[in-house]
Length: 280
Image (tube, rainbow, N blue to C red; front, side, top):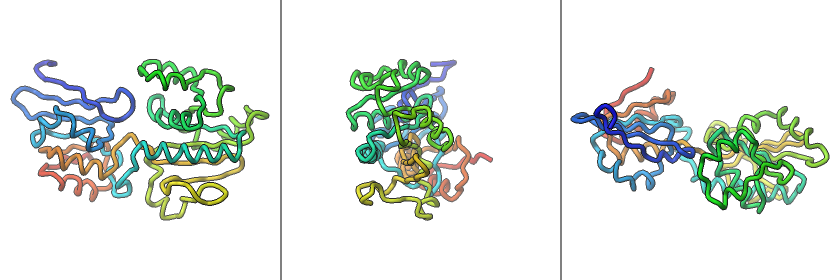
């Protein structure tokens, strides 16, 4: 306990090491603060600590995607499988393509590891991110996929913003002139599943034959760079939030990310007997 408050850390199912915190002050209503979290039903329901406070807690909720525009996300495993198949087909078409996979200082590692495993190769990770990953206690099979040698593999982990910057990617291709003739960029983010983008027909079929790609992958080709955006999310979709609130039945829901879709938040709280605390 900290100053009389029992504090329990729980897996947030976000990036490696991310935790939710359950605060239980003596004689008062407990508070669950999710922090950044992907509240997938089965994972959460198996936590006995959460089951213990069902119907009797305040929930401070990650509302990053609290919008009907982001009603559902495919599972992370499904996204990884789909984009790995896309990359395999692209590399088969152009063996001299460099694959740039976006990631954060910590987060999105599953994407570049999944692609590397599918291609039977390693992933180059720069010194700065490698220092972070040394703290993650990786499984031996994943450690074996990491190389500090950028010429050993055509799969490179890069900062996520690089995969959104055409000039930056063209500069990277120029740096590797003679080794690579094109770039396949992978931008893994839930924001790619924006329904307004889908309504504008930005989702295109993959491969010269125009078949074989999951319909949640968007593609943009410009010059020698092809960019695939995929909804690999480490935050909850709206439906995952709604389902979690319905299961937990908190007394109060407090959003800690500004909510722009007020109707979605009202629907979220109607799935519980909770009161609502809004953030201006």
